[in-house]
Image (cartoon, rainbow, N blue to C red; front, side, top):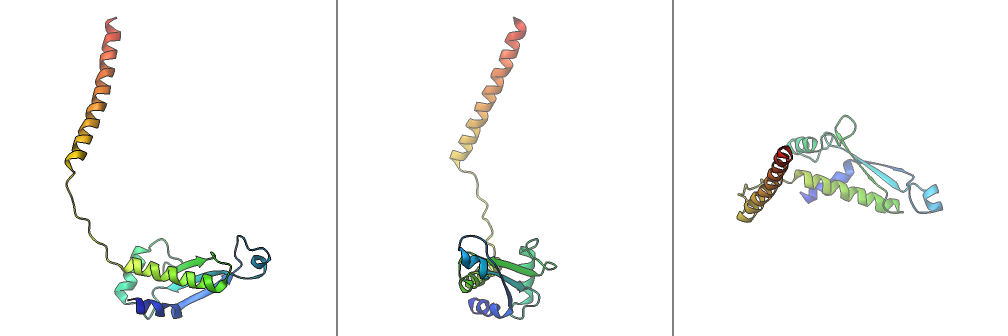
Length: 141
């Protein structure tokens, strides 16, 4: 799977712009921020099932008619380093989304957690019962 992910860079569209943050004159005159766009449906390297899984899991986070992943990187002062960071982010995102979810095994509450819950309920019940006694005592006086 990792071999296929390295080939995804050929299907990415990169654009650069001026980055914000520290850097002095370098920031003002060089375009170090990198935007990576990867269209899921136009990819020749992903299987149709993988495309559907990606679109379903990334719903609401995609741009361009919910088909394109947009990743930006401006951590470094170097355009090349930011480009590599964006590619790594894309690979990690796709690998994480395509990893099958492990179903949770249902477990019973432990004895200690049950006892703690009952003790808290009794404490709240005692507080409420004391409220009732105070109201009755005030009415009698």
